Length: 347
Image (cartoon, rainbow, N blue to C red; front, side, top):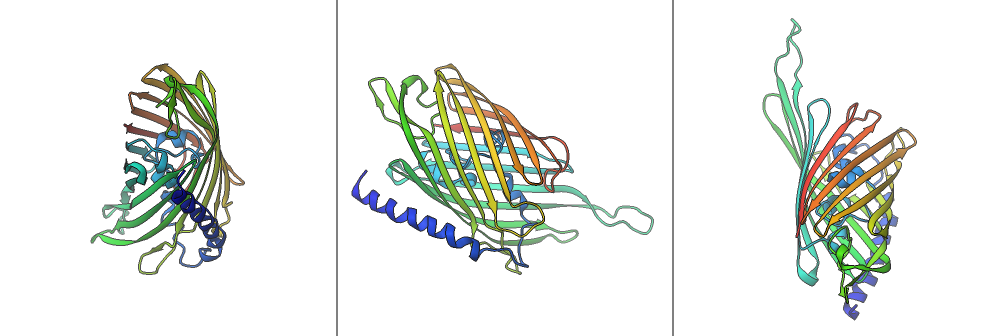
């Protein structure tokens, strides 16, 4: 690592932890909180991460890192594209698309857009009990992210803009700043594996040496989200969220990944703002360019416990993932099962 990069890293890490320390005081819940207006921002992105229960802070190294932890962009493939869709109850839908590109030794950038919509909402009824029409509502988020790897550490930033469309007769628009996400990621406990596994389920860039690839097995990350948000004419804020996670890769011919996340939302609600997420992924390498993965996850708080499952197929960088969520009803998901599908490409 160059002296310049060492100095940059030594400056960024203390800055990150200072921000994490003072943010709970700066972004506490107040009367203008928009926590009920933008809960879909907490839905995440990508069926792979959902299948792991959202325990993705330490291993988000594809295009969905723009949502989970922008620091992961520093270890992403040269070009990465992800499109995800989620169908919820009550005519609700959630869609996400992101594109990331590396800039050589200067890190990587990513752009992303997400949409949460509700269609066919009934208007009030007349005196005869007949509906006077229906309308739609749409919430959109647009983000620009940057991440860079500095040795075994990654740092990243995401800036986010928000807008919504809502109206019965005349469409009303409202927009604002969705805040900044600041993330850190690290990798440790390197081992040597065969080149056959290179490019398959590896989380960081590697260097081959005599047919062997040295890769880390321990990953950790932390991210603070929605810092400095201000939305709408009332200058509402989105409560800050901190996620901290750790993951471990077990190489035994195939690869098993165990991941755990802790999440704390700084908001005053009757429901618990703290949750624990855990996931496990088993990758079967069926050939040099193809692998198949099975996933399971859980998300638990004092009030709600939710189970997740899913699978993924990767053929020469083109990956299709599916996830299913089973659990108690929620404000966003409604009741019953929720299905997620995503398509991604890495080159």
